[in-house]
Image (cartoon, rainbow over all chains, first blue to last red; front, side, top):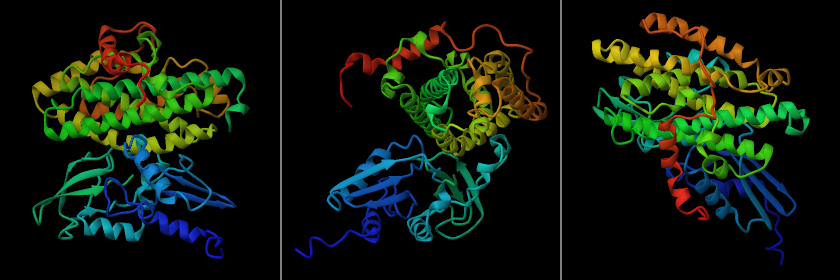
Length: 170
Length: 257
């Protein structure tokens, strides 16, 4: 009986969350992307709040369901919800997440904080920049602000002559 | 601030604001999606599909806020009304027309929407402030993109420039409606839901836009708009779009998705 009564720890929950891949870029987990806002463990109730990367991301329900499925059974009551309590920003992607993105050919996003504080109109002349994840060159050209999913931008590397995608700084 | 703190008139004004913003984003998203497959270049197919997806996502979040405030079902709000029940700005009653027209419409809308989102960034109504914080980060990309296109067409030779100028002249009176037609906006400003009344947001928008229009030699706003800004009278073009985006739901209203 002693084994089954062992208390669930927050560490065990975070370890389980780290096993849940992002459905669109499966090399990174929901923890790598910084999607986990809170983990609350209160007696029999485990509650996890997740932050949506993009408001209209079609994978949100899939992510929520995947997390709920992975945590099911870890506590008698498991709740997984999305929240807009704080905005998810690409600055939340962990160092480990950035390494994994780069290794799979995605340029990690640059700093995102600039857009939040000043008037939106003041951002109008900004252009994203990226270093090539293949050869490291900064000699790259923005091809399209919008890529195959909402969170990606398309670049061209002028040195190794390869297209690549960047996770949007947002 | 929670909804309970708001006095009844402010609460009703908040509901009106949420519906107007949600309908703006929703209808624009459907017009954007009309370009999928037929945009001038492949990159624009992808870009406009992304823009459409963002806007419909924003609408979904705003309809949800309205449902949380007033009760009801977000899908019913989005798809269950007659055309006269929508409260989007008259700017969005126009069809996509040609590329310059869609670019001009989006640029005018995105810049006006940016001024509106700035005025809501520190909203005392927390649920709205949370969604707006997220929307602002996404809308920055829309602004960049449409600004790049306006610049390209304005400096792109005789025909692109002529088409862009004609579109802006036609759209300006209706563009003023994006920051108008919200009843009780002064109450919302007093309650801290909105930083300032819509007339002040509109002035800030026009002041921000003026140097850019002057730089590119593009037409500015007329002295006044004409007519009602947010319905109930609607164009045949919007009725056609409504037929399109409600088609599946009307064919099987009881279906569970």
